[in-house]
Length: 221
Ligand SMILES: Cc1cc2nc3c(=O)[nH]c(=O)nc-3n(C[C@H](O)[C@H](O)[C@H](O)COP(=O)(O)OP(=O)(O)OC[C@H]3O[C@@H](n4cnc5c(N)ncnc54)[C@H](O)[C@@H]3O)c2cc1C
Image 1 (cartoon, protein in one colour):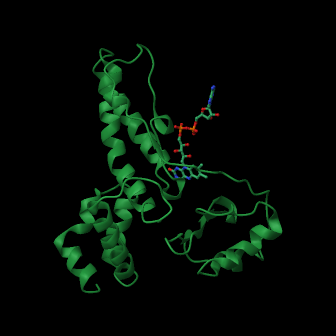
Image 2: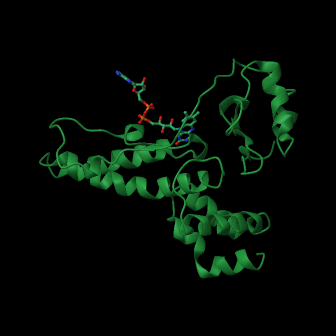
């Protein structure tokens, strides 16, 4: 296996996906993803068979010959949830909320730990200025941290017709553009990199719409 990560993402029409990520000692973690349908199976024979239903064969082809080191475990995610603590006028002195307790994302986007770490950095900064109105100052900065990943994750979730949530023209337009970008990125390294910079929270979402990239999205890269 040449790379350290293999991904077959779920799509609006095919709601199953899988991810393999290399770990130390020649081990891999394998995650199977099912949206809006029966969970991926936990028992080992079915777990090995299930990735046959994915559009790309590599997960099944790899794990059918691999040695399992433990049982599979299921994790359900009923909804992405964002709590707007920054909108409160008052908050109990001596308490704070951080990480998933502020906002929990669909884990498929792999954002939660990064967001929690970025919030911890903000907390470090606001603590340096003393603890007067600490909660208000922290929640306001945490909200800025959450804005982009929340927009990315919920915007993409809304591509699935079954997702419940408000859709507007902007979300539909962005999703239409992103679908075109994904297709063009199959053959265009710069588009692929630009997408991954946004997905990994290194660049803001509008960066993938820079005119230089938009031309390549519309004209095939
Ligand atoms: C299947 C799955 C895959 C994920 N993959 C990724 C990924 O690839 N990349 C990524 O960045 N994020 C990923 N995430 C998200 C990431 O795990 C979370 O965003 C992150 O763990 C949030 O950290 P946290 O400290 O806020 O909460 P948690 O990690 O949930 O920690 C909260 C802790 O509080 C404890 N606790 C709860 N109630 C109490 C109580 N009453 N008393 C004492 N302790 C209590 C819990 O046991 C837990 O240890 C994934 C999540 C899931 C479910």
